[in-house]
Image 1 (cartoon, rainbow, N blue to C red):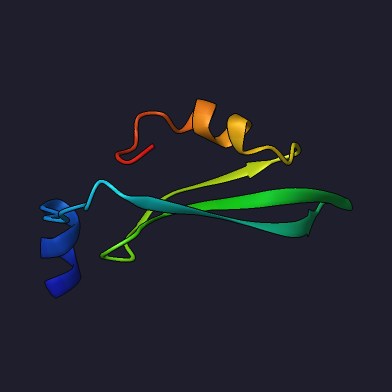
Image 2: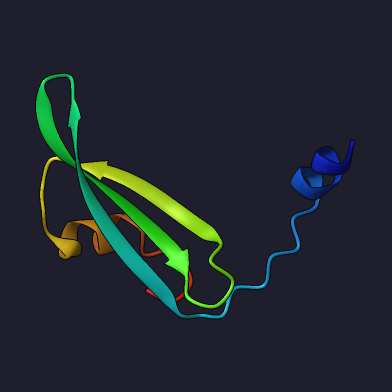
Length: 69
């Protein structure tokens, strides 16, 4: 039950700084961008996003609620 305790009460402290990484993937025969937002210090995965567009502005617009952006 160790995982359950973490999931029920996550105590992640984000640094307020984040990195965005983009990787091109093939999904249903089309190329898409797979975006990850990662905390700079803890390396905690904050968010992921799959987009047909390759601009950071699209990701920031959709993920504004996350710290560090």
